[in-house]
Amino acid sequence: MKLSVLRLSLLVLVPLLLSLFFLALMPKETAMKTYEVFGVKIEKNPPQSKLAELGVSTWNKWEGGPTKIPWSFKEEETMYLLEGKVRVTVEGSVGSFEIGGGDLVVFPKGMNITWEVIEAVKKHYSLKK
Image (cartoon, rainbow, N blue to C red; front, side, top):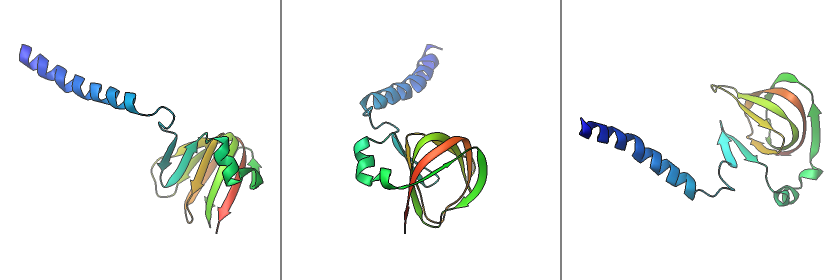
């Protein structure tokens, strides 16, 4: 009986300890800051130096209130959301994801989505031809 309890404890504790060890070694600044969902690249709160380097303040501006529309990206589009929240559903994918104020997002050319503004959005955007 004691041996089976020991085995069960090891099966639970070893993966848990390894996970905690991995998290402790992970740099805090980069943990989950940049990631990709359904082929869309998202960077949370990029530094002002990166936004300046990209010239975000010179990009076109768009703003809009709550709405739900289908959208097709004819060109790669990079956007920086100043404020708001959007739920994005990618055509042919199961599920959705949200982007919001402070996110730098890149949608690939040819992607079809449903763009659902949950909270009024203000963004800068740039099209790559």
